[in-house]
Image: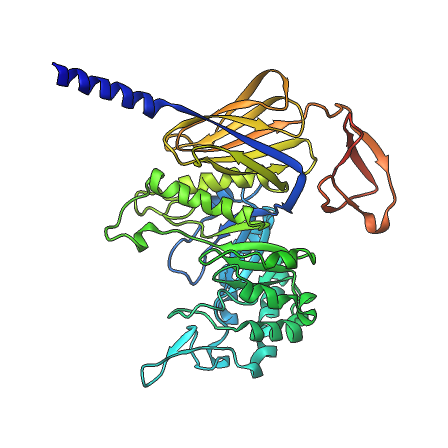
Length: 475
């Protein structure tokens, strides 16, 4: 009998522990702004790739302001050989019809221009020694014209490309299409021939966002010939690119994937607890490192944002990872990341905070990989009367609900579900309800918003005036 009672008591205690709620606080500091968020998206494989072809309806489901996912950046690949350029035209035209940002990346230039006459980025010689495969310097001008020909081809067919990359992963030695570039070679190409490309240039799209490639781009001969620094999230994200941001460049993370079946001995389906938070943390960590945009690899893939009928996914259905990325795409695009300090004794909660472009709303992303619920106090830089919570769990997809507060407060308390991704949105209740129309003449019609972002405006603009006298421009 004693053993039975002890067993029941143990079960009772374990039940209490499992059901316990932790307390935590996040302090949001709008006086410390970081980077503006340009957006989120993924890669469309339509063309030479053997997987992930997306239909028109599938593209519309992920991209565009009226789409289910809300992504606003699409990455295309540049087919090897000008005769293949047309393979990406329909996807490019669809992207521009949706009003999204479109950029393209090349895997390889024509093999004849390379040191070992193969599209792969490495070559095994007759002695079995692996050699890196470079673009011959004598063909640098040919390659610049080749990239511009792709820009011109799309332009002639009604598509204005927003940016073009010089090379996908110039530091990768692989047995598939690619080309190896040292930082010196890449810099030389951009400095001498970047002006031949009639489109904004992205570089270097290396395996990581490391200082090895970022720091050399600060050179005076290079800095004015490219527009966007980019790297992938397979290696470290270092801080050298922030020097480029200080000179007016944006920093984009342009490729990431986490395929559990590459590393585990037995193939399996997606597991929420194992896989969802690896993905959410990758996005959040990149934003905390100061990137302006985050773009996944293949969008339609079992490990991507839309299912492809493999490993338990449904063709054309948004995956859990797709919804996690949608939290950021729908609610932080156009905002500015601001400082967030977390007070959490469990050390489990992760997240980031943002202020809207108009300065009237705070967005807080909360990642809770634990099996515990939390009572989270959100310390805001203003008073609020109400908010909204959007939650994704193993059983819910971006479930939205209102946060009702008893009174105006700067420290609302909200419940955070166990094992969840949550977006919290709070609106400043001290903004006057009637906007004022003002006319200002400024050089080049340029002004700065509350967060210091340089923005274009017409002669007439709407200005919200806070009770404390601050102004926020609303375009």
